[in-house]
Structure formats: C-alpha cells, structure tokens
Image (cartoon, rainbow over all chains, first blue to last red):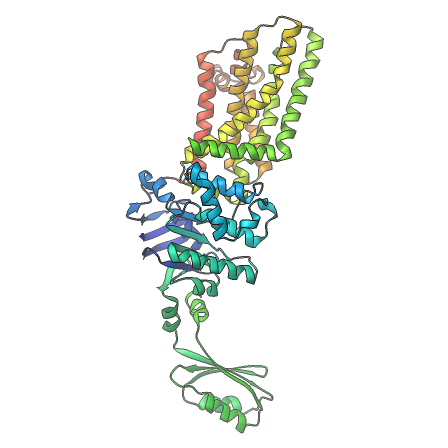
Length: 305
Length: 238
C-alpha cells in the first residue's frame, strides 16, 4: 500500500533522511521510533506531502507522490496529525471539525453525521461547543486525532500523538490508537518505546536518518538477547566478593555501585544460585537478587547509540 | 471553489473574532474621516478628493496590520501543516487568503461611503471621480495586500511581517516621487515612475481608469501572490 524507496532529504548540509526504504501493507500499524532529531518528523512530512524529498520515491496505492496529477487524490486518502496537534485556537471543537470536514470535501448533508461520528469515537461529545484555546492538552490531542479521522481516510499518520500528555491521557490516547488500528493503516512516530510497543504491529527504528531496525516488537526484543543482567543488593560489601564472582564461568562484567552489584552474564546460564552462594559465604548479607533480560529499551539504546 | 470560500470565511471570522479587526477598521475610519474633514473645511469645495489623496499612506499602515497574521500566525502555531496537507491546491489557499483580506478592505471602504454621500448632499461633486477613487482604492489596496501576504509567508514573526511590509510598500510608493526621480538618469527614472504605486493611483484619481493602470495593479497582485505560493507550496520533486 505504501512503498518508500531510497528516500533522502537534506537541509543544506544536514542530512535528515539518508536512503530510507520500506514497504507497508494495508492494515499494518507501524511505529517509527528514534531519538529526537533522528528524522521521524521529516519522514512523516514527506509522506503527507508537506515536504518534498531531495531524492527518492514514494508510492501510495501505486500512485507516485511526486506526480502533481495524483497529489490531491493521495492527500484525501490520508489523515494527518502533526506534532503538538496545531489547532485554530479561536474556534470551538465543532467549528473546527466542520472546517476540516469541508476542506476534506465532505458534502453538506453528511457533514453533521461525520462530525458526530468522530466526536463519539474520540470521546469529545461534551466538549463540542468548547473553544479550543481552553481545552487541556489531552483533549487537544483528541481534537487533532478527530480532525485526522473525519473524512474516514484509509491511512492515518500521527506524529508523536502522546508526547506531553500525563499518564492517564497517554493510556486513553493509546487505546484510541489501538481502536483506529483495527480498521486503518496507521503510521505513528514516538520516542517513547512503551507507546510503540503497546500499539504497533511493526517497529521502524530510525537513527541519524537511517533505518537501523525494522521488525515486530517481539522479534526485535529477542534479537539482542545475547546477555542478561543480575542485580544484587548486599548489606555489607566483603572484599573477596568481586574477585570470587569474576571466577564464575559465564560472568562477563561485575560493577559495584555502593551496596549494589550489577553483574552482566551470558544468556545461557542462570547464575543466580552461584552468586547467592558466594555472597552468603562471604557473610555480606544478601538483601536482593534479580535477573533481567535485555528488553526493547536496551535494543533501542544499543541501536541508536 | 467551495474550499476557497471555506478558507476565506474562516479567515474573515478570525479577523472579526479578535479585537484587532475592529481596531483596524476604527482607526482607518478615524484617520480617513479626520483628514477628509480637515481639508473639506479648509478648501471649502464639495469634493471627496481629499479622502482618496491620503489613502496610499493610510493603507500603508492599516493593511499590513491585517495581512501580518495571515501566514505568520499559521506558521508559528503549526496549523499551516494541517492546512497545506488538505486535498487543496496551494494556489487555492493563497487565493483564499487574498480574498479574505480583499473582502476586509472592501468592507472598510464601504464604511467610508458616508463621506461621498454627504458631499453629494451639499454640493455637486463629479461622481465619476468618486467611483474612480473607490476602484483605485481597491486596486491599490489589493497590491498592498498581496505584498503583505507574501511577507507574512516568509516569517513566523508578526511584528517583522508588519514592519517589512510597510517598508516595501513605502519603497514602492516613493520611487515615483519627483524628489527621487530627479536624482536618477532618465532611463531609470522612467522605470521608477512606472513601478510606483503613486503614479498609477494619481492617474486614476483624475477620474480616468485606464487599462494600463488596471494591468499594472493586477500584475503586482499576481506577481506577489505567485511568490507567496512559491514560498508555502511544496516545490517540485526531483
């Protein structure tokens, strides 16, 4: 449905996107992940035709975005929410959605119905006559999403839809995105991993303008599981502990931080038993011992270093 | 066409939803009324000429106050990103923004209609000159608006937008002034005189709307709207 080939965007000397290619099927929910300034927003802006790429090609439903003949047609297939949900502050929610609806070419007879529809979907029914300038950030984000959905587009593109929200609002928006993902093709960007993990069927990790990973969340998590970490907390650190720990086969690194010991081990063995034994023998008073496998967070940090 | 009108309506609503729209209209009426009255009693002639004589100067400060928001505010708040990704052509959005400021200008001018009505009641002014004056004011105002919209599209800052617009209009205004023209060699002076707002406006105020004056103002409008579209539109893909 969406085909991106060798997309490059330069702002003068700065290379924002560097040869990005990927394909996307109908119904997929892709999370574009990357640190700030990695090129996420640039990629999305090119997809919605707000920016032109320096080189490369994008096709949506087989139509070339670079061809002016198709641009209006492609635009109406897409619903877009830019970063920070920019809205016309002096309008009420209803006025704004009505304006957007008309701009999306919705006929007058259908307009009210469509507005009511998205108001309900986004939980905005009691706010419909409120002026946008006095809405909370969470509600503003919902108005932005409602705006992107009003013409029932097949593709929905959301740039950092959960940034700046409090935890409750974030969960609400996340649920809303999951709901949208059931019936539409969705691309969203985020620099928060858990968001993407919770909502997306596929993750693209971008760093310095390049795609460094493209996989399902589960597979990405497994890919980098070459090591495990064991955290121990002791009452009193004996002098012999560290040299003795280092002798155990499979231990790669031992780090001391106050009364905490962080031990990096290979993945094959669970060494907790051996470690506990040494700490107890040294009379250090074992307080806590936990094993932790590399999670998506570590994969992300590893890939975007 | 529907989409153009939708944007025009939205823009006009925002002019009149904020105090600024009313302030601008009031200041305009106050200034033009004052200047007219002053010369009306001094000259003692039943003519609306003095109303139009000062329009190039009054417009220079009034119209940029309207256009300074147009794109600058959309760029500052980010709404331009939503606006430009609607299925609508760049030219349509530019035209819609121009239309809304034009309607604003027309409303403002309509409110001065009391002056010619009053003059007609007292004396017997030349109606042709009054009509030509209004047509000229619309043409002159349109070119100011087109310049203001273009400037507004290249900055996020409304103050900069205002000051730059006033400056550029001022330059276009004075290049036809004889004080400037006398300093220039004849070949360049001719161009300066041709490009100046005041030359063409004064010629319209004499009561003759010539084709060349209309073409001049329309070219200015089209030229700056074209620049405007170039700035806000997505450039061609390579």
